[in-house]
Length: 134
Image 1 (cartoon, rainbow, N blue to C red):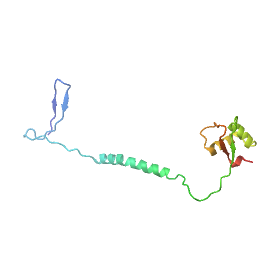
Image 2: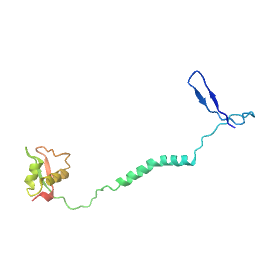
Image 3: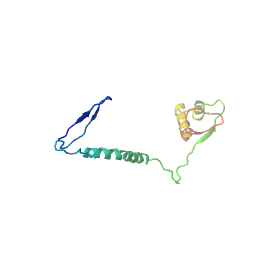
Image 4: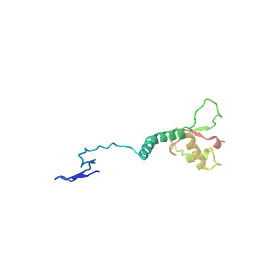
């Protein structure tokens, strides 16, 4: 049989739960050990395994990136031009491919040269995609 004792003082009330076994028969207080249940084991195993699963998933997804090789592929053919003062990508697109849509030419130039924006500076060398050269 267990009994619960409550102690109150001038300070805020404090509840102390003390299990007692055989208090009437002069038994001593029983200390309980912390035991983990099957559900607790599953939760703990999941929490431990989760970072490992995430790391493996990231490694698998990023493992398909391109690898450089020593094999010679088809040589890239493109023409280069030097940017003159007053030039813009729009005017360059009109000069190198007057028959094409300037927006497509500009997108091709930005992609081929890995430009962060459409801003260019005089003296800069730009590669023109082969599909837009004459």
